[in-house]
Image (cartoon, rainbow, N blue to C red; front, side, top):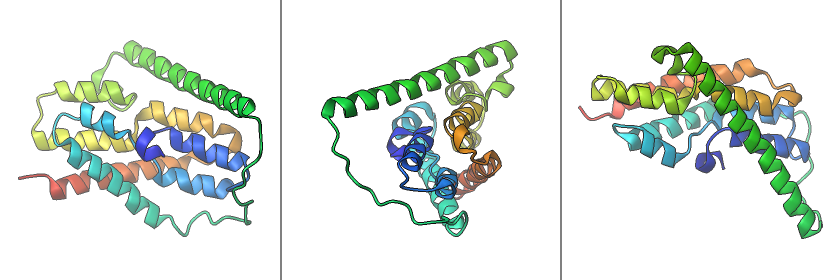
Length: 203
């Protein structure tokens, strides 16, 4: 789902699965390491050069991370299998809307907060990795070579920006998930994305 909807939907879905006792805390820790995706329409519309190559590198780097962590954070016990509970349609709809609105308000508030921070800092280099949209807009305005701009776009998308990091951390805060592995995974994904782009970018 995060491939389609982007981050922080990976954290939101993993948290809901944990609350429904479908997965344990170790599984949540593992899943968020390799489910950091950016909405494909956002990538195609915001990346100036070779957007499909950047999208491929962004996704493939996640796959590599997924294989590398497959034996880490082993689940402690078998969780309850997926079951369908009979609830009134109105109750299901109301709960879904309330959960969605709470998450959307949190995300919107985070974006506004980090936008204000970038405005206060007023330094283009510092704001590059704070919020993705602003970072890509600034990157597109620079007079860089096509190769350099493509690589930096991929690195920025794979790292995610501190705004997204804060959103993921905020959603999973009550689960006491370790943040350092997630940060290291994003750094690794950014480096892998840069290498993949270097290998496949047209000469």
